Image 1 (tube, helix red, strand yellow):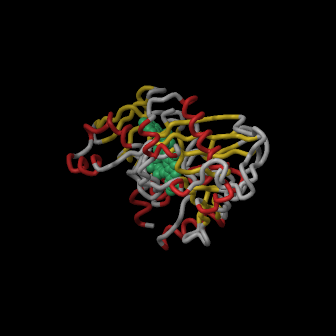
Image 2 (cartoon, protein in one colour):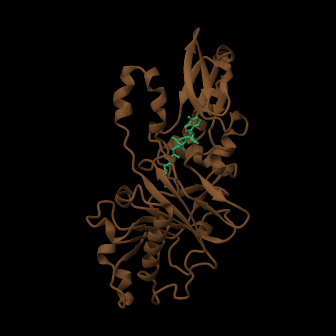
Image 3 (cartoon, helix red, strand yellow):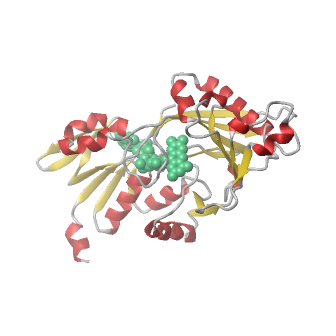
Length: 333
Ligand SMILES: Cc1cc2nc3c(=O)[nH]c(=O)nc-3n(C[C@H](O)[C@H](O)[C@H](O)COP(=O)(O)OP(=O)(O)OC[C@H]3O[C@@H](n4cnc5c(N)ncnc54)[C@H](O)[C@@H]3O)c2cc1C
């Protein structure tokens, strides 16, 4: 209580309403700080993102998460109890392309497809969509959306901010937290102490093309999530994909059949500057190969039910990991 009173007058600006910014904001709010969260997009959640309209939806950034530490397990349990998250019990398999069969010998495809007997750690997702967790976390807070912070200045012991949309902001803050992707920190780097440099330099980025592919009917496939190839695949061009997942297998999802297709790191690196249209074509073709190879009763689908809609984005992100505040990324496409 004493801490809460002592901090009651302290105003903190948090820049970025992804999971990191939301977590920091909630903790500070609970400790009695006056928190204002700034977000450049229309809503909170960052890379835990979902695209949707009245017909379809797809998580196109983070796909699922696990909870290993007791503290995070307790947090995730609380999210589940509140209906913000749920366990995803999708059928997950791995497709080893080095063992995949050539066209015409699909009967042997089982050699290439390996199912997880039991997930080593339960997988969770936001419910009814990936954005739900962060959206619920920040609901009681003061969130200023569609405000891209472009400048920060220390004036008479307080922080003053400027944004692209509104120019100089009227509020002053006692402290600032940046919870944004590393490349977007660049305009602010002159404000950081030298001791932060080593940490900043150690942040690696792994870009990822993502395609959301819609189908006119459910695909009769034996998996809901598929890891494709291997992370160290010596022949990454064997498939452009690293992961595919069926939206409707996740709890709470409704609407048209959609699959999220993530390109592999090496493929994305090689095609960073290609057009979204070209990438949609390549990833969709890669998915078609996955459909054909592991089908237990022969090639699927043969009825031309390839994607009806191809909504794509190029992510410029990180290795996955929700708990790392500094492992940051953003959609640039
Ligand atoms: C394709 C992809 C797949 C992934 N898959 C998984 C997965 O399966 N499991 C997993 O655990 N993790 C996964 N991740 C990683 C996970 O999504 C991220 O680690 C996590 O969401 C990062 O959260 P964050 O709050 O650090 O950053 P972000 O979610 O990027 O949030 C930063 C926020 O800051 C905002 N912002 C940026 N600059 C400004 C500014 N100047 N002013 C105001 N607002 C600004 C952005 O709009 C954004 O909302 C994946 C990421 C990607 C891209």
